[in-house]
Amino acid sequence: MTASNTSRRGFIGALALSGAAIGASRVIAAPAKLNPSDVKKDTDIACLYHCDFGDVGRFSQMLTNMNNHLSAYEFDSLRLKLVIVAHGPGIKFFLADRAGTPWEKDQIDDDIFKRFVGLTKFGVEAYLCEITYKRQNVDMAKTRDDPAIKFVPSGVATVGELQGKGFAYLKVG
Image (cartoon, rainbow, N blue to C red; front, side):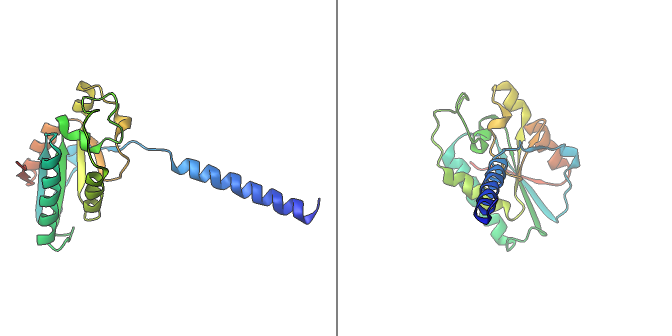
């Protein structure tokens, strides 16, 4: 075996490994399941934004309000915790694929999800209702992959649970 063959084999092996690594990085993991009773109010100020609507303009305004809310606390996640609780048509903003859903014809600019992701850098999370997925026959695997997105058994039950823990309730519109 010559040095050039060894180098070529090493190069091809490295390509195969890097391809496997790239392929592995494309595996989409479903968002985590969260028991609302495990959520703690660990900041002085905590608010839930209730999203049970499908209007894109209203959702955009909610994200703007959340950004303004965070700015009032200098984007300090040790002082302020914000979460979105979404159910009904509100889950559509978190779907990577709306084909076969009641919202498949809805036009949603990808920038709206990018805005949500920007807020997650300051601790914002979204809790999505499993009951909505089941009742609307939406495959949970259609949900975007982001660590700030979590499934909860029931959106409305989560709203009540968080309010009971001292989370303020906010709804846009």
